[in-house]
Image 1 (tube, protein in one colour):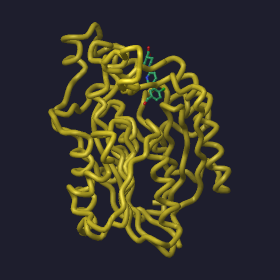
Image 2: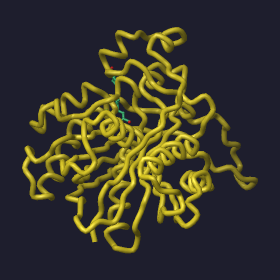
Image 3: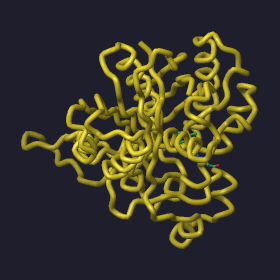
Length: 325
Ligand SMILES: O=C(O)C1CCN(c2ccc(-c3cc(CO)ccc3Cl)cn2)CC1
């Protein structure tokens, strides 16, 4: 039993915030942000939560495929900014799109979340037990950012994207390589919850735990680890670098993609990018980029091209999955 990608979709909240808009209340500039990150603007929710963004992306996918939510067997949603601890954001999306027969759950692997979710969905599907699965990545990073911290506030945006996986006689799954290193969990944290109960002697403070990131540390980890997972997934698939049509990488930083391209000796022209217009949308970045590539006809579903998806970030987590589209 194989799998194939049959539709893609995304949704970005309509409110666009430019670098100049941020420079009005942060000590930063369009020039600095653009030069150091590649970002010109980001989409910021005007009140829509992660489930709202994800449901609109899912509706776009279903509309493109011409099916209703009732045909969906499962929804796997990657997010580090769920609407709540319970229910899962995936279950809220289920209700919004009428996926009445689906089983639904969230995956949290921060910015590697979509790669981990896509791997999970592929293996569910390749068991032969399911016929149609939605794999989504969705974030409202704007709710965990400290908007007074210029080092992080300029980097992130909100958004949602995803794809429809269907059973297929021809298997489009090629290879994967997934990792995490919990010993460095402090490198990127957000929204930690403190234990509170009447039996605790010391009162815990209620301060909101904004996103905190060891930018330099993560940058160095990514430069070291991501080329290895790209090469390992290519080797696991018995492929050569030239077999890869596109690297669809997490959109964290344009300088980073330039450095990774040099290290793996895959031309930068094969690294799809949209960070300029979206910022870093964490688990949503890869599916939004894929959807932009399909919508702009940069790639065609059914073309047979090999895409290498690679994610990296909090956890620390990193990983790659190669799929023929
Ligand atoms: O001074 C500079 O040039 C700054 C230095 C710090 N920067 C960073 C640092 C880390 C990240 C990042 C974030 C994630 C989480 O999605 C994953 C992977 C990475 Cl590499 C993005 N930007 C911006 C430019």
